Amino acid sequence: MIGRFTILALALGLTAGAGRAAAQPPTLELTLDDAVRRAVDHNPDLAIVRLSTDVESARVGEARTAYTPMFSTVMGRSSNTVPPSNFLLGTVGVDTRDWFSSTGIRQRVPWGNGTWSVSWDASRTTSNSLLNSFDPSVASGFRVAYSQPLVKDRAIDAARTQYVIARRNEASSELRFRETVVQTVSAVKQAYWTLKALRANVAVQQRSLELAQQLETENAVRVRVGQSAPIDLVQVQTEVAQRRENLISARAAAQDGEDRLRRLIMDPGDTAFWQLSLEPIDEPSGRQPVPDVDAVVAAALSGRYDVARAQNDVRNAETNVAFRSNQRLPDVRLETSYAGAGLGGSQLVRTGAFPGIVTGTINSGFGSVLGQTFGTDYPTWSLGVTVSYPIGRSFDEVSRVQAEVERRQAVQRVASLQLDVATAIRQAARQVRSTAERGDAARAGATLAQERLDSEQRRYEVGLSTSFLVTQAQRDLLQAQVNLLQATLDYQSSLVNFDALQLAPASTAGQTIVVSGSDVQMLPPANPQGLFRTAAAGIQP
Image 1 (cartoon, rainbow, N blue to C red):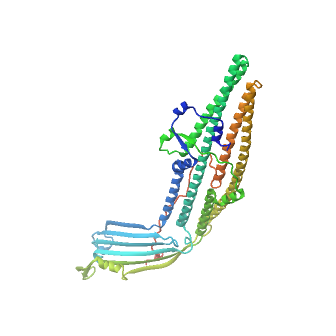
Image 2: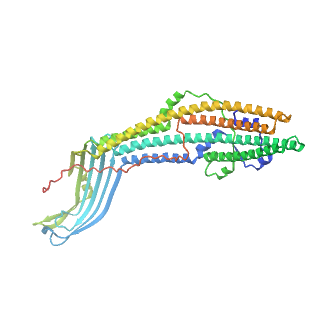
Image 3: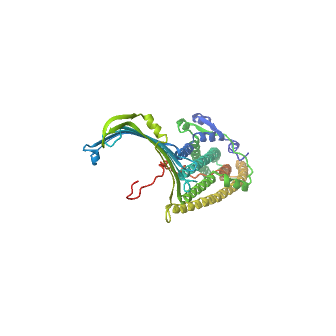
């Protein structure tokens, strides 16, 4: 195809000099697929987003810890000496010493959002109090309690809200990664075809310089034999200088384009990659038919990654509304508990009047204490309902209003984004068509410019034209060839852009790749203790 970069260069008969080739660095022949693969494997921007998805996965794990059982234990020794403030205690201070331990587990359950707890404690106490029946005494007790919300927090609570939103944010981060992959692949393709065009432009500028130098040589001969005025040679020499400057700029632009492609595909740990010369060897595709734009737009409105992320934001907002609405309900909870206790050790046997004289002891082991604890000797149980509800407008009511506004905003953002998607894809489709037509026109212009130069060169050789007209024809051919290169590059770029826009938005220069999620708050489960009567003021149970 005439519009292809390499075929255009070959048609111009361009080859690099053998002396320059020997001095060039090692060359890496690079296909487009290989460039894309290298970018996906090594591009650090993709690695940043991939790590961000790992962060969101960790946040899901953080939210799930709200349902992790929590174990706690306490072990210690204490000593307490109090003055004899009661005549029953005698005149000596009471010294009490304890060895004690307490162990428990509590957990928030994911179904119904209730909380259960199991605890067990044991102690060994010695005391010189005259009122004690055991010295030392061994005590043990256990408690099982459960708290179940019946209205507020039953369908959804703070822990479930965090977990659901964290899961959606994890899905959104994966979508953002895929979106970044599409954008990176698009950037690699754009850089690949740009480098291909810049290299072809160097060849075009080199060929143009050679034509000007050839004309300069012919003019010098004519000036020497008196067939041309010296001013003609000066004019051609000026043109040679200008085209040499253009060639220098073209080579610098090609080196810049090579570094842009290198930046996208290189392994940051491979510094030797900077010394390689990248040689894109794939050829641009021919003209392709544009698919049904309306069908493409319809698919992108629901399937594009940024739209899917925005829809996840809507679902998160709906979850917040559901949570805030639930928090306005009365807090009604079913509280239940059961506890057992046991006591043993060395029981003092007393005789005589109070406080009596210790005449012996009756020993009971810890096994007997455990039997009492887990038996029915000293049971304690409770069952009841607690109700609390704010009087007047509560914080949760105001928060629900705010959450509803944020939900409506998220819905409108999706609608606005879908309009942007449709506009961008339709514009990209028009760009594909217009650049294809430009390519046809530029190809015809390059062909005609070549024919004009050939005709002008033949007329010049027989004395029917001037060096000025030949120079002008060379300029026109150069511009036509540059236009053809630009049109071919624009067409390839428009194809790449059209394909990418079906999955992801176009990336902007200087865009910072960040995936931000919600912070997870630590929510330890409550410790239900059961429900017991509180003594009224001035009345002791």
